[in-house]
Image (cartoon, rainbow, N blue to C red):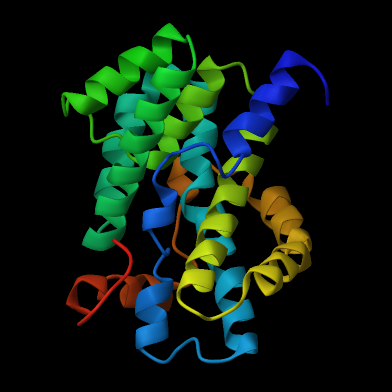
Length: 223
C-alpha cells in the first residue's frame, strides 16, 4: 500500500488522527459500573457485542452517505431520530463534529470544509456515521476502506477505554484486538450491504446501560 490514497487510508485510521474518540467509552464505563463486565470473558463478550452493534446500527449510515453524499442531511436527521439513547446521541454528534473539524483542517477537500462549517453552525446535527461516510467519499477513500476504518475505530476506542478503566493492560488490549479480527471480518461481511432502513441495535441491554452514564457518581468518559 504505497499509493497516495493508501497513505490517506492509513492516516485517517491512525490513532494519532485527533477526532476526540478517546473521550468516549462506547458504554463500557457504565457497563463496568453495573457489574456487567467484571471478567475477561465478559469483556470479550462486550467487545464482540459492541462491534455487532456498530455494524448493524452505524455501518448502514456510513455506507449510504458514502454512496450518496448529497443525502447526508436526510441521513443525519434519520439517525438522529433513531438514536433515542440521549448519551449515545450526544456522543455521536460530538464525535461527528470533531472528526469533521479535524478533516477540514488537514485535507484540502471543499466538500469536507463545507460540511464542517455547517456542523459548526449547527445547520446539521453532524452525527458521526453519516458525516464520516460522506467525508471519506469526498477524500476519495473507497467504501470498503471507509467501513473498515469506522469499524476499527469503534474497536480501538472501546479497547483504549478498557485500558484507562483498568480492565486490561495495553498488551492485553492488543491481544483482544488481534483476537477479534475474525469478528471484524464477520461484521463487515454481514453488515456492509445493510441500508439505513435495516439499522438496529442488536444488543439493547448495552444501549440501556450506556444511557445511565450521566448518572454515574464518578466517570472518566463522556459516554
